[in-house]
Image (cartoon, rainbow, N blue to C red; front, side, top):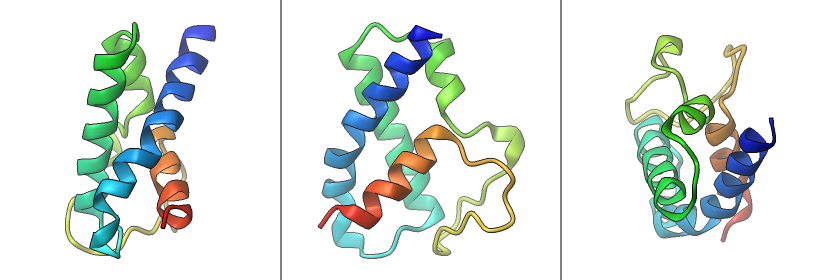
Length: 96
């Protein structure tokens, strides 16, 4: 479990810088959310000893079929919000 918590902490540390790079977009769309997710996980994978299996536990599972279009992100109606999506959404609201 410690391995999962360490990876989650690494994601939370990486997210603000990645979000800042995209903040000029003004609106967090589903397409942008997926793009940021990929960038965050790539940075975490490159920077640390986290296995791909652990990182896959933090990403949005394809089976949940989150949108990938240009509509604004809303988790309304979704029963589960993946760890990376949640961290990105939180940072989007906080990063100037």
